[in-house]
Image (cartoon, rainbow, N blue to C red):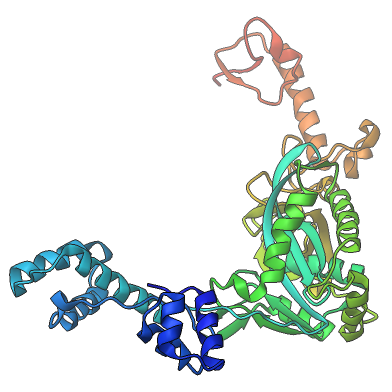
Length: 462
Protein backbone atom coordinates (compact mmCIF):
# COMPACT_ATOMS: atom_id res chain seq x y z
CA UNK A 1 0.00 0.00 0.00
CA UNK A 2 1.28 3.42 -0.94
CA UNK A 3 1.51 5.87 1.95
CA UNK A 4 0.14 9.35 1.11
CA UNK A 5 2.69 12.13 0.97
CA UNK A 6 0.90 14.05 3.77
CA UNK A 7 1.31 11.04 6.07
CA UNK A 8 5.01 10.82 5.19
CA UNK A 9 5.44 14.49 6.08
CA UNK A 10 3.65 13.96 9.39
CA UNK A 11 5.88 10.97 10.21
CA UNK A 12 9.05 12.91 9.56
CA UNK A 13 7.81 16.03 11.41
CA UNK A 14 6.73 14.09 14.52
CA UNK A 15 9.98 12.10 14.49
CA UNK A 16 11.94 15.35 14.32
CA UNK A 17 9.90 16.68 17.30
CA UNK A 18 11.07 13.73 19.46
CA UNK A 19 7.94 11.60 19.63
CA UNK A 20 8.40 7.87 19.94
CA UNK A 21 7.77 5.75 16.88
CA UNK A 22 5.13 3.66 18.68
CA UNK A 23 3.20 6.82 19.47
CA UNK A 24 3.52 8.03 15.84
CA UNK A 25 2.22 4.66 14.60
CA UNK A 26 -0.83 4.84 16.96
CA UNK A 27 -1.67 8.42 16.07
CA UNK A 28 -1.34 8.01 12.25
CA UNK A 29 -2.71 4.45 12.16
CA UNK A 30 0.28 3.00 10.33
CA UNK A 31 2.67 0.23 11.26
CA UNK A 32 5.89 0.84 13.16
CA UNK A 33 7.84 -0.52 10.17
CA UNK A 34 6.32 2.19 7.96
CA UNK A 35 7.25 4.83 10.52
CA UNK A 36 10.81 3.51 10.72
CA UNK A 37 11.09 3.40 6.91
CA UNK A 38 10.16 7.03 6.31
CA UNK A 39 11.73 8.40 9.48
CA UNK A 40 15.12 6.93 8.58
CA UNK A 41 14.97 7.79 4.86
CA UNK A 42 17.81 10.18 4.04
CA UNK A 43 16.91 11.12 0.44
CA UNK A 44 13.39 12.21 -0.38
CA UNK A 45 14.23 13.25 -3.96
CA UNK A 46 11.69 11.97 -6.52
CA UNK A 47 12.85 8.84 -8.32
CA UNK A 48 12.20 8.10 -11.95
CA UNK A 49 8.92 6.19 -12.35
CA UNK A 50 10.50 3.04 -13.77
CA UNK A 51 8.20 0.06 -14.26
CA UNK A 52 9.08 -2.89 -12.12
CA UNK A 53 10.38 -5.78 -14.13
CA UNK A 54 8.25 -8.85 -13.82
CA UNK A 55 9.90 -12.16 -13.24
CA UNK A 56 9.65 -15.02 -15.71
CA UNK A 57 10.28 -18.14 -13.66
CA UNK A 58 8.62 -20.40 -16.27
CA UNK A 59 11.13 -19.26 -18.93
CA UNK A 60 14.24 -19.81 -16.86
CA UNK A 61 16.73 -21.77 -18.93
CA UNK A 62 14.95 -20.95 -22.20
CA UNK A 63 15.79 -17.26 -22.59
CA UNK A 64 19.04 -17.89 -24.50
CA UNK A 65 17.31 -20.41 -26.77
CA UNK A 66 14.59 -17.88 -27.69
CA UNK A 67 17.20 -15.14 -28.29
CA UNK A 68 19.15 -17.51 -30.57
CA UNK A 69 16.03 -18.26 -32.61
CA UNK A 70 15.37 -14.55 -33.17
CA UNK A 71 19.02 -13.96 -34.08
CA UNK A 72 18.90 -16.71 -36.70
CA UNK A 73 15.74 -15.16 -38.16
CA UNK A 74 17.74 -12.13 -39.35
CA UNK A 75 19.13 -14.19 -42.23
CA UNK A 76 15.77 -15.70 -43.23
CA UNK A 77 13.18 -14.18 -45.60
CA UNK A 78 10.89 -11.71 -43.88
CA UNK A 79 7.78 -13.85 -44.36
CA UNK A 80 9.50 -16.97 -43.03
CA UNK A 81 10.57 -15.68 -39.63
CA UNK A 82 9.34 -16.88 -36.25
CA UNK A 83 6.32 -15.29 -34.68
CA UNK A 84 5.75 -15.36 -30.91
CA UNK A 85 3.14 -18.07 -31.43
CA UNK A 86 5.56 -20.23 -33.42
CA UNK A 87 8.25 -19.85 -30.76
CA UNK A 88 5.74 -20.86 -28.06
CA UNK A 89 4.72 -23.95 -30.04
CA UNK A 90 8.35 -24.98 -30.46
CA UNK A 91 9.07 -24.42 -26.76
CA UNK A 92 6.21 -26.72 -25.84
CA UNK A 93 7.09 -29.39 -28.40
CA UNK A 94 10.89 -29.36 -28.20
CA UNK A 95 11.76 -28.14 -24.68
CA UNK A 96 8.77 -29.14 -22.56
CA UNK A 97 7.72 -25.59 -21.70
CA UNK A 98 4.82 -25.47 -19.26
CA UNK A 99 4.26 -21.72 -18.92
CA UNK A 100 1.72 -19.43 -20.58
CA UNK A 101 1.82 -17.95 -24.09
CA UNK A 102 1.61 -14.37 -22.78
CA UNK A 103 4.96 -14.82 -20.97
CA UNK A 104 6.65 -15.86 -24.22
CA UNK A 105 4.94 -13.05 -26.13
CA UNK A 106 6.16 -10.34 -23.73
CA UNK A 107 9.69 -11.71 -23.77
CA UNK A 108 9.84 -11.82 -27.61
CA UNK A 109 8.50 -8.26 -27.77
CA UNK A 110 11.15 -7.00 -25.34
CA UNK A 111 13.94 -8.62 -27.38
CA UNK A 112 12.70 -7.14 -30.65
CA UNK A 113 12.30 -3.66 -29.20
CA UNK A 114 15.81 -3.79 -27.74
CA UNK A 115 17.26 -4.83 -31.11
CA UNK A 116 15.34 -2.10 -32.98
CA UNK A 117 16.50 0.60 -30.56
CA UNK A 118 20.12 -0.50 -30.89
CA UNK A 119 20.11 -0.65 -34.71
CA UNK A 120 18.04 2.44 -35.47
CA UNK A 121 19.31 5.81 -36.66
CA UNK A 122 18.77 9.06 -34.84
CA UNK A 123 18.77 12.61 -36.17
CA UNK A 124 20.63 15.71 -35.12
CA UNK A 125 19.49 19.23 -35.78
CA UNK A 126 21.89 20.81 -38.26
CA UNK A 127 23.25 24.32 -37.93
CA UNK A 128 23.76 26.23 -41.20
CA UNK A 129 26.35 28.95 -41.52
CA UNK A 130 25.37 32.24 -43.23
CA UNK A 131 25.81 32.14 -47.00
CA UNK A 132 25.00 28.44 -47.37
CA UNK A 133 22.39 27.48 -49.98
CA UNK A 134 20.28 24.33 -50.41
CA UNK A 135 18.89 23.30 -53.82
CA UNK A 136 16.25 20.77 -54.84
CA UNK A 137 13.66 20.09 -57.57
CA UNK A 138 9.92 19.55 -57.37
CA UNK A 139 7.23 18.74 -59.94
CA UNK A 140 4.14 20.77 -60.78
CA UNK A 141 1.64 21.36 -63.59
CA UNK A 142 0.82 24.64 -65.30
CA UNK A 143 -0.89 25.93 -68.44
CA UNK A 144 1.60 27.81 -70.64
CA UNK A 145 0.52 29.24 -73.98
CA UNK A 146 -2.75 27.30 -73.88
CA UNK A 147 -1.03 23.93 -73.30
CA UNK A 148 -0.96 22.00 -70.02
CA UNK A 149 2.67 21.12 -69.22
CA UNK A 150 4.39 19.10 -66.52
CA UNK A 151 7.17 21.43 -65.38
CA UNK A 152 10.05 21.34 -62.88
CA UNK A 153 10.22 23.69 -59.91
CA UNK A 154 13.80 24.60 -58.97
CA UNK A 155 13.87 25.74 -55.33
CA UNK A 156 16.84 27.31 -53.53
CA UNK A 157 16.87 28.34 -49.87
CA UNK A 158 19.19 30.11 -47.44
CA UNK A 159 18.58 28.12 -44.22
CA UNK A 160 20.18 30.73 -41.98
CA UNK A 161 17.60 33.40 -42.87
CA UNK A 162 14.85 31.11 -44.24
CA UNK A 163 14.93 32.90 -47.60
CA UNK A 164 13.14 30.88 -50.32
CA UNK A 165 13.31 31.31 -54.10
CA UNK A 166 11.91 29.20 -56.96
CA UNK A 167 12.07 29.10 -60.78
CA UNK A 168 9.96 27.11 -63.26
CA UNK A 169 11.96 25.07 -65.77
CA UNK A 170 11.16 22.67 -68.59
CA UNK A 171 13.73 20.06 -67.55
CA UNK A 172 16.31 19.10 -64.92
CA UNK A 173 19.17 18.89 -67.43
CA UNK A 174 22.41 20.57 -66.38
CA UNK A 175 21.97 23.56 -68.71
CA UNK A 176 18.46 24.18 -67.32
CA UNK A 177 19.72 23.83 -63.74
CA UNK A 178 22.50 26.36 -64.31
CA UNK A 179 20.13 28.79 -66.03
CA UNK A 180 17.67 28.53 -63.14
CA UNK A 181 20.37 29.05 -60.52
CA UNK A 182 21.63 32.07 -62.46
CA UNK A 183 18.13 33.59 -62.31
CA UNK A 184 18.07 33.07 -58.51
CA UNK A 185 21.56 34.58 -58.19
CA UNK A 186 20.25 37.68 -59.98
CA UNK A 187 17.47 38.02 -57.39
CA UNK A 188 19.95 37.76 -54.52
CA UNK A 189 22.55 39.89 -56.24
CA UNK A 190 25.16 37.48 -54.84
CA UNK A 191 26.33 33.87 -55.20
CA UNK A 192 26.33 31.47 -52.23
CA UNK A 193 29.53 30.47 -50.48
CA UNK A 194 28.47 26.80 -50.42
CA UNK A 195 25.68 24.83 -52.07
CA UNK A 196 24.10 21.60 -50.83
CA UNK A 197 22.43 19.56 -53.57
CA UNK A 198 20.33 16.45 -53.88
CA UNK A 199 22.01 13.32 -55.12
CA UNK A 200 19.39 13.03 -57.90
CA UNK A 201 20.04 16.38 -59.64
CA UNK A 202 21.92 16.76 -62.91
CA UNK A 203 24.68 18.63 -61.08
CA UNK A 204 26.39 15.48 -59.83
CA UNK A 205 26.02 12.24 -57.92
CA UNK A 206 27.67 10.68 -54.89
CA UNK A 207 28.14 6.92 -55.18
CA UNK A 208 29.92 5.10 -52.35
CA UNK A 209 31.38 8.32 -51.04
CA UNK A 210 32.77 9.49 -54.41
CA UNK A 211 31.21 12.50 -56.15
CA UNK A 212 30.94 12.61 -59.96
CA UNK A 213 30.01 16.12 -61.08
CA UNK A 214 28.77 17.08 -64.53
CA UNK A 215 31.22 19.11 -66.61
CA UNK A 216 28.84 22.03 -67.18
CA UNK A 217 27.99 22.38 -63.48
CA UNK A 218 31.68 22.19 -62.56
CA UNK A 219 32.35 25.09 -64.92
CA UNK A 220 29.38 26.97 -63.46
CA UNK A 221 30.67 26.39 -59.94
CA UNK A 222 34.17 27.57 -60.90
CA UNK A 223 32.71 30.69 -62.56
CA UNK A 224 30.91 31.78 -59.37
CA UNK A 225 33.52 30.37 -56.94
CA UNK A 226 31.26 28.43 -54.56
CA UNK A 227 31.69 25.03 -52.95
CA UNK A 228 29.33 22.11 -53.53
CA UNK A 229 28.25 19.31 -51.20
CA UNK A 230 26.02 16.36 -52.02
CA UNK A 231 23.62 14.55 -49.73
CA UNK A 232 23.72 10.83 -49.17
CA UNK A 233 21.19 8.82 -51.19
CA UNK A 234 17.69 8.79 -49.67
CA UNK A 235 18.71 11.29 -46.98
CA UNK A 236 16.39 14.25 -47.42
CA UNK A 237 16.86 15.16 -43.75
CA UNK A 238 20.34 16.46 -44.65
CA UNK A 239 18.71 19.39 -46.48
CA UNK A 240 15.43 19.73 -44.64
CA UNK A 241 15.10 23.47 -45.33
CA UNK A 242 14.69 23.11 -49.09
CA UNK A 243 12.68 19.89 -48.76
CA UNK A 244 10.14 21.85 -46.72
CA UNK A 245 10.27 24.85 -49.06
CA UNK A 246 9.39 22.77 -52.15
CA UNK A 247 6.05 21.75 -50.68
CA UNK A 248 5.40 25.14 -49.07
CA UNK A 249 5.93 27.16 -52.27
CA UNK A 250 3.99 24.67 -54.38
CA UNK A 251 0.98 24.83 -52.03
CA UNK A 252 1.02 28.61 -51.64
CA UNK A 253 2.01 29.83 -55.12
CA UNK A 254 0.87 27.12 -57.55
CA UNK A 255 -2.62 26.34 -56.26
CA UNK A 256 -4.85 26.50 -58.26
CA UNK A 257 -3.05 25.42 -61.42
CA UNK A 258 -1.59 28.65 -62.87
CA UNK A 259 -2.09 29.72 -66.49
CA UNK A 260 0.27 32.12 -68.30
CA UNK A 261 1.11 32.97 -71.87
CA UNK A 262 4.85 32.27 -71.63
CA UNK A 263 7.31 30.70 -69.25
CA UNK A 264 9.00 34.07 -68.44
CA UNK A 265 5.61 35.42 -67.32
CA UNK A 266 5.21 32.43 -64.98
CA UNK A 267 8.68 33.01 -63.53
CA UNK A 268 7.93 36.71 -62.98
CA UNK A 269 4.84 35.67 -61.01
CA UNK A 270 6.91 33.20 -58.93
CA UNK A 271 9.55 35.87 -58.19
CA UNK A 272 6.86 38.24 -56.93
CA UNK A 273 5.30 35.47 -54.84
CA UNK A 274 8.65 34.56 -53.27
CA UNK A 275 9.23 38.19 -52.33
CA UNK A 276 5.90 38.26 -50.50
CA UNK A 277 6.60 34.99 -48.71
CA UNK A 278 10.05 36.12 -47.57
CA UNK A 279 8.75 39.47 -46.33
CA UNK A 280 6.53 37.70 -43.78
CA UNK A 281 9.04 34.96 -42.87
CA UNK A 282 11.10 34.54 -39.72
CA UNK A 283 14.30 32.60 -39.25
CA UNK A 284 14.57 29.63 -36.90
CA UNK A 285 15.72 31.63 -33.89
CA UNK A 286 12.68 33.91 -34.12
CA UNK A 287 14.37 36.94 -35.67
CA UNK A 288 12.80 38.73 -38.64
CA UNK A 289 13.87 37.55 -42.07
CA UNK A 290 15.54 40.83 -43.03
CA UNK A 291 18.04 40.83 -40.18
CA UNK A 292 19.31 37.30 -40.83
CA UNK A 293 19.14 37.86 -44.60
CA UNK A 294 21.69 40.67 -44.35
CA UNK A 295 24.03 38.25 -42.56
CA UNK A 296 23.57 35.78 -45.42
CA UNK A 297 24.39 38.41 -48.04
CA UNK A 298 27.51 39.50 -46.15
CA UNK A 299 28.84 35.94 -46.24
CA UNK A 300 28.04 35.32 -49.92
CA UNK A 301 30.25 35.85 -53.01
CA UNK A 302 30.05 38.87 -55.29
CA UNK A 303 28.84 38.16 -58.82
CA UNK A 304 31.50 38.37 -61.56
CA UNK A 305 31.25 41.00 -64.27
CA UNK A 306 30.49 38.41 -67.00
CA UNK A 307 27.47 36.14 -66.72
CA UNK A 308 27.90 32.44 -67.26
CA UNK A 309 26.57 31.07 -70.57
CA UNK A 310 24.81 27.85 -69.59
CA UNK A 311 25.23 25.88 -72.81
CA UNK A 312 26.01 22.19 -73.35
CA UNK A 313 27.72 21.43 -76.68
CA UNK A 314 27.12 18.12 -78.42
CA UNK A 315 28.46 16.92 -81.78
CA UNK A 316 25.94 15.78 -84.41
CA UNK A 317 25.93 14.91 -88.12
CA UNK A 318 23.18 16.25 -90.37
CA UNK A 319 21.27 13.67 -92.39
CA UNK A 320 20.43 14.00 -96.09
CA UNK A 321 17.59 16.43 -95.26
CA UNK A 322 19.83 18.67 -93.18
CA UNK A 323 18.32 17.52 -89.84
CA UNK A 324 20.40 17.05 -86.67
CA UNK A 325 19.24 15.12 -83.60
CA UNK A 326 19.96 16.19 -80.03
CA UNK A 327 18.34 14.93 -76.80
CA UNK A 328 15.79 12.93 -78.78
CA UNK A 329 14.49 15.83 -80.93
CA UNK A 330 15.28 16.79 -84.52
CA UNK A 331 16.33 20.31 -85.45
CA UNK A 332 16.53 21.60 -89.03
CA UNK A 333 19.89 23.08 -89.98
CA UNK A 334 18.92 23.36 -93.66
CA UNK A 335 19.36 21.23 -96.80
CA UNK A 336 22.66 22.94 -97.62
CA UNK A 337 24.22 21.31 -94.52
CA UNK A 338 23.32 17.70 -95.34
CA UNK A 339 25.98 15.18 -94.34
CA UNK A 340 28.02 17.80 -92.47
CA UNK A 341 29.41 17.45 -88.94
CA UNK A 342 27.89 20.23 -86.82
CA UNK A 343 27.98 21.40 -83.22
CA UNK A 344 24.68 21.77 -81.36
CA UNK A 345 24.59 24.09 -78.34
CA UNK A 346 21.76 23.14 -75.93
CA UNK A 347 20.52 26.01 -73.77
CA UNK A 348 17.49 26.16 -71.50
CA UNK A 349 15.27 27.83 -74.13
CA UNK A 350 17.22 27.84 -77.41
CA UNK A 351 19.35 25.55 -79.57
CA UNK A 352 22.29 26.98 -81.51
CA UNK A 353 23.81 25.07 -84.46
CA UNK A 354 27.37 25.89 -85.52
CA UNK A 355 29.43 24.70 -88.48
CA UNK A 356 33.19 24.51 -88.79
CA UNK A 357 35.17 27.49 -87.47
CA UNK A 358 32.18 28.62 -85.40
CA UNK A 359 29.97 29.70 -88.30
CA UNK A 360 26.40 30.04 -87.04
CA UNK A 361 23.96 27.92 -88.99
CA UNK A 362 20.71 28.43 -87.07
CA UNK A 363 19.26 29.41 -83.71
CA UNK A 364 16.06 27.48 -82.97
CA UNK A 365 13.69 27.28 -79.99
CA UNK A 366 14.40 24.40 -77.59
CA UNK A 367 11.85 21.58 -77.65
CA UNK A 368 11.31 18.87 -75.04
CA UNK A 369 9.68 15.48 -75.30
CA UNK A 370 8.38 13.92 -78.49
CA UNK A 371 7.26 15.99 -81.45
CA UNK A 372 8.02 17.08 -85.02
CA UNK A 373 11.32 18.53 -86.17
CA UNK A 374 11.96 22.10 -85.03
CA UNK A 375 12.60 24.32 -88.04
CA UNK A 376 13.33 27.91 -88.91
CA UNK A 377 11.61 29.01 -92.16
CA UNK A 378 14.57 31.21 -93.09
CA UNK A 379 16.81 28.13 -93.34
CA UNK A 380 14.79 26.83 -96.31
CA UNK A 381 15.09 29.90 -98.56
CA UNK A 382 18.15 28.61 -100.42
CA UNK A 383 17.33 26.13 -103.17
CA UNK A 384 19.63 23.18 -103.35
CA UNK A 385 21.13 22.73 -106.81
CA UNK A 386 19.23 20.06 -108.77
CA UNK A 387 16.10 20.05 -106.57
CA UNK A 388 12.70 20.09 -108.25
CA UNK A 389 9.84 22.45 -107.65
CA UNK A 390 7.89 19.78 -105.80
CA UNK A 391 10.67 19.15 -103.24
CA UNK A 392 10.72 20.62 -99.74
CA UNK A 393 13.91 22.56 -100.29
CA UNK A 394 12.55 24.86 -103.03
CA UNK A 395 11.01 28.27 -102.36
CA UNK A 396 9.42 30.14 -105.29
CA UNK A 397 10.92 33.58 -105.94
CA UNK A 398 8.92 36.63 -104.95
CA UNK A 399 6.54 38.05 -107.58
CA UNK A 400 6.56 34.90 -109.74
CA UNK A 401 9.81 35.93 -111.52
CA UNK A 402 12.25 33.26 -112.59
CA UNK A 403 15.67 33.21 -111.00
CA UNK A 404 19.09 32.32 -112.31
CA UNK A 405 19.82 31.96 -116.02
CA UNK A 406 16.15 31.11 -116.73
CA UNK A 407 15.34 34.80 -116.16
CA UNK A 408 17.22 35.74 -119.36
CA UNK A 409 17.74 33.72 -122.50
CA UNK A 410 16.95 30.02 -122.58
CA UNK A 411 19.69 27.52 -121.86
CA UNK A 412 21.25 25.54 -124.81
CA UNK A 413 19.41 22.39 -123.72
CA UNK A 414 16.01 24.17 -123.83
CA UNK A 415 16.81 25.68 -127.21
CA UNK A 416 17.62 22.30 -128.73
CA UNK A 417 14.45 20.79 -127.30
CA UNK A 418 12.32 23.55 -128.88
CA UNK A 419 14.04 23.08 -132.22
CA UNK A 420 13.26 19.35 -132.20
CA UNK A 421 9.61 20.06 -131.45
CA UNK A 422 9.32 22.44 -134.40
CA UNK A 423 11.06 20.07 -136.84
CA UNK A 424 8.99 17.08 -135.70
CA UNK A 425 5.71 18.93 -136.20
CA UNK A 426 6.59 20.01 -139.75
CA UNK A 427 7.71 16.49 -140.82
CA UNK A 428 4.58 14.88 -139.42
CA UNK A 429 2.38 17.25 -141.43
CA UNK A 430 4.29 16.61 -144.70
CA UNK A 431 4.26 12.73 -144.61
CA UNK A 432 1.33 11.15 -146.64
CA UNK A 433 1.71 7.51 -145.45
CA UNK A 434 2.30 5.93 -142.08
CA UNK A 435 3.72 2.38 -142.63
CA UNK A 436 5.51 2.62 -139.33
CA UNK A 437 4.94 5.11 -136.51
CA UNK A 438 6.90 6.01 -133.41
CA UNK A 439 5.74 8.43 -130.71
CA UNK A 440 7.58 11.75 -130.87
CA UNK A 441 8.28 12.64 -127.26
CA UNK A 442 9.28 16.17 -128.20
CA UNK A 443 5.88 17.06 -129.59
CA UNK A 444 4.09 20.01 -128.10
CA UNK A 445 1.41 19.57 -125.44
CA UNK A 446 -1.30 21.01 -127.75
CA UNK A 447 -0.53 18.56 -130.61
CA UNK A 448 -0.62 15.56 -128.29
CA UNK A 449 -4.07 16.27 -126.93
CA UNK A 450 -6.07 14.98 -129.98
CA UNK A 451 -8.62 12.14 -129.85
CA UNK A 452 -6.19 9.64 -131.40
CA UNK A 453 -3.78 9.93 -128.49
CA UNK A 454 -0.23 11.22 -128.79
CA UNK A 455 0.84 12.68 -132.13
CA UNK A 456 3.08 10.23 -134.03
CA UNK A 457 5.81 10.85 -136.58
CA UNK A 458 5.44 8.58 -139.63
CA UNK A 459 8.43 7.18 -141.45
CA UNK A 460 8.63 5.14 -144.63
CA UNK A 461 9.99 1.64 -144.62
CA UNK A 462 12.64 2.50 -147.15
